Length: 198
Figure 1: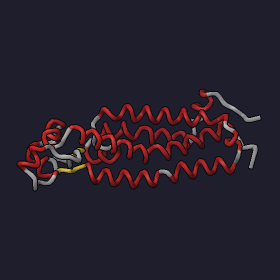
Figure 2: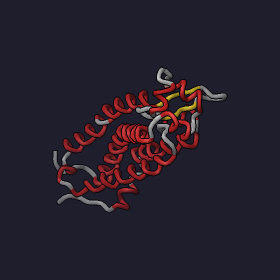
Figure 3: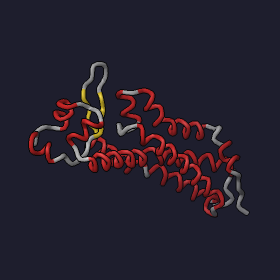
């Protein structure tokens, strides 16, 4: 018989080192909002606050999905538990590569008075931009007009800005979710106890 646990027991299991790690990783998008500047741009892509709540919701759904595996037969196999952890941790590397590529493509850093400013730009410029400032770099355009969303939409198409921001958040999640999944699995394994199969 496969041992089970309630959702409440599972979430009580987060009062552990793995649970603490999950909590820290979950707090990263919020801490980024509170810190501002370089730390903020490092902890969460500069795509605006609208993406933070959905990111937290995705994390919560992931932990619930991990809990949903508590009745699966594979969860009682020690080797399959290890495999699940390796897959979770291993999937962070491709996510990191995608995030670094999308960050370098869409995020621009400009110096500020006290600290640098980071903004996400689009991948397609407006016709106006191509007609009047074809040779201007992204940084030139941002220095010329400003760093607000309105300024960015002046130079880049709305569609390309939205797609760029979605790509940044999606690739960010590909980095953040695997370690959260692994830590959540460790919490679940602790609540379920020792596996009954090799």
